[in-house]
Picture 1 (cartoon, one colour):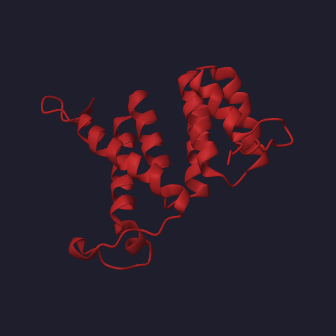
Picture 2: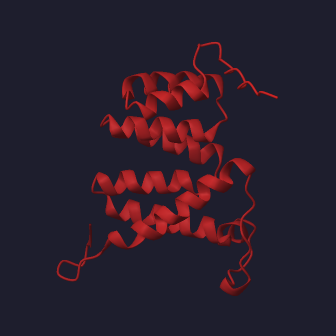
Picture 3: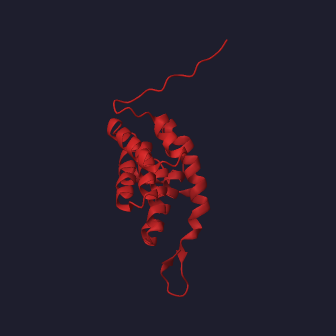
Length: 167
């Protein structure tokens, strides 16, 4: 019994998630920006599309546009960790170390489940923190984001000479 691959579902713009991802695999950043831009319009509540579009804008050295997309991803899915990490990385790249640390801290709180309790007005007890609820879409992305966080959290630190935060 042979299986045929499922046909790509094209959005009205003619772009599919698969074709957008293919542009990224080919490092065709302008086409990827066009594809994810169209998908963001057609799927306005899809936070991952905004994250991907923000990353592409960052690769194209369009920092303010990247930040707007990361901000929108946070607004759409505030419980996810990845948008906070992407914003932190952008801030770090731009030399805004205080903002980067703040975003890394928020990502840690989100991942640990502490944030859910704080938003509910509960006192923080680290021994009883429960993971924040998340959708199935976020599970893999959040695992990858947590690994990224652990790898990069220590790279922004306080300088002992000038007492400011340096990369």
